[in-house]
Image (cartoon, rainbow, N blue to C red; front, side, top):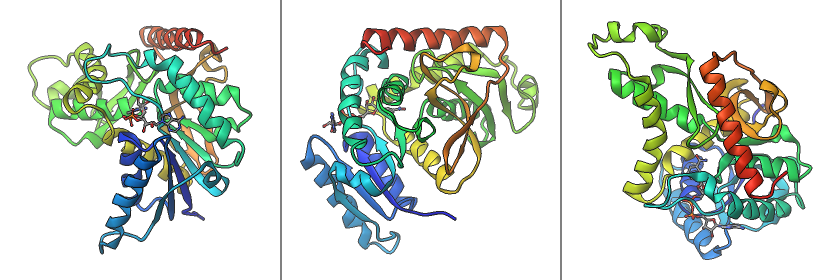
Length: 318
Ligand code: NAD
């Protein structure tokens, strides 16, 4: 039976506010507490969203600025604290590793004073570095730490392929795996559209040019930076991703989605967190799948491991 409870959101800027509003609109919480170093920001966002509770379209959710004590009875803690890459900067999330490793340690050392029960939804970048740090530096149940990872890139793949063939993005199946960032790769061996078969799509949709997989893959990475450069930050897509995971946990869906966690020996890896398909239930991440990958995709997964490990080393994380 599901229990809609309290969500604590840490970091109340672009991403935290978007997560707040999606959780509110989807009614995934009965109470939401917002924490930020800048508590005025948290107060402002809590007030703004609270005003919308008067609307007949809203369920009356209690939304307020919070403190870490709010973690004590939280069902979910969503971590969005720490800076992002900014418009015009080098397009690589990994350069945030040192700064946000410190932010993660400071945030998580507060959380563990109050709970080891809440499901942790990780959003802060570099996502795989942040997920690894909180999982290995603190004695928190690993199954309850879920890095949003490449579900966002997977949604971008669905959108881009669907635009290409002019179909519903929900018709696109398959995974983007590896690092959430520049070394994310499309596991083409898993991709299909409406069960028509990837190799037959050009024929079905009467395209004279062959699908350019390299170009699609490049587009999935680049599109994040396009959003940052066009509007200053990304927040809506990731907020939907966070809600997808929260719903999967609330409803005990046993759904399989790509997400990041510390690798537990799959593909011989254990010194990084990366996204591979994992099963999500009310207990969090209950299984991971070592999908059989062809050699070229395996090489790309190894490249992701190298990049994330190098960023961890650079930030002094064992
Ligand atoms: P932002 O720089 O606008 O806001 C960061 C907020 O964190 C600020 O309000 C700041 O006061 C707060 N903060 C910093 N240190 C803190 C601490 N120790 N405790 C509490 N609050 C603290 O960034 P944003 O655009 O909202 O993005 C937030 C994070 O989410 C970034 O790391 C960004 O890269 C990441 N992000 C991840 C994804 C993803 O797919 N995983 C997508 C978008 C953004």
